[in-house]
Image (tube, rainbow over all chains, first blue to last red):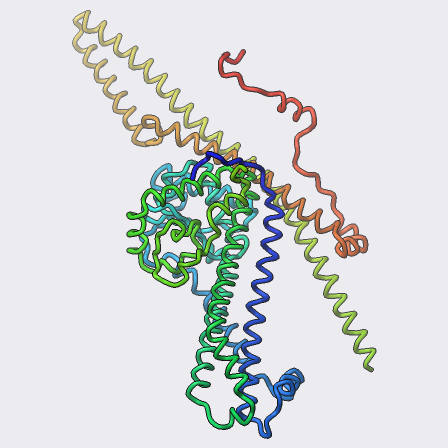
Length: 347
Length: 198
């Protein structure tokens, strides 16, 4: 991939930000709706198991809505979700750098001009964003070109960049990359993705419990109650819901990537440096596929950073984590990201 | 009873909605004010950074100049002394030169930034950083004005603004260049072939 056959144009980053904000709202509403529906399904199931004489499903739903039957399952699931999300929020910033060889950069500890420059460009972007706090800046000692951000508050906000990326980019490109990362912090992406993935995991755990209790705990009562219908729903959900949540999570993370790219243009008012940086990173990953593949797979806990990365190594065939989700990338295809930045193939 | 309850609920909802819009606009106004002062902060920073850069360079150049002059003078003195066969005068002169040399080394150790070429890159980085911060502070100021104007002029918010105009209706001026300055800078070109006229 190179500059040939492409035309660069201006980009309407305001519209990009708005449309992706709408998409995010859709995904979050979907997640909450699915979660509540699953809770209600369990409540209906419990009501069928316990209430005599048996009631039709519509009647159970009506009584749940009027709180004549108290929706214990839905409420306890909501409580569990709130607690888990809170706990995840307070601990996530300690795990993001897990397994890497890193050190923090401050104006006092910058060892050379490159480190000083890195800190400077982050500080410049902080000024442009009107951010009240300075995120911590880390360098990861690795050859592959990547960067990520995490956190949303003074305590947790951080940006990290590999030495490979820092050394191969010029000042403007470095600034664009850091603007992309700072946009993730400004948009509070880590909160959104953590919330969505906590809900997704909880849903799958609850569904599994329900599935096995149906499978092994069946008695004659179910059949008398016409419980076969709900059992069928549970079995179907057991296979459909995991795929649905994976697709929703991927859609969310891709949406947030587009938003961070647009946010980079918003902060630097220039789309060219990020285009150059993305092209460089992609080409560099293609050139050193074997070497970087080994480096990624030797770094422990690579999976916690995958969504946060600037560039998903899966896109050039490197699979740091062996899992089903490698079939889909957490990031939009590089061509689509470049197109959204105003860098399109000539027709 | 039912209608009274209903009316109270609506009134409370309206009040909450009014307060949220009021607070939002106040927040935006204060953001604009802060970002305006941020430009001053960056201007102040630039002044101080450049002052210290100039001082570093000046003291370095002055030192070098005076050192060189001293070295040349001392050398001449030493040569004259040697030609004149004045051994004492020659030794004193050489001694002074080596003292100056060790002084130069000392200064270089104290200011490693001044060592070969590195200083130039560091100065360039410092200048780029300072200029960028100033430009981005102006950009952030304009962005916050845009956000405030957009909100205050949009529907519903504009109603609240007309209710308490002296608190909520501010006219901020975007940071911009005067028209003649723009024309002047539009016409500005760089010709690298001709040396600039003094």
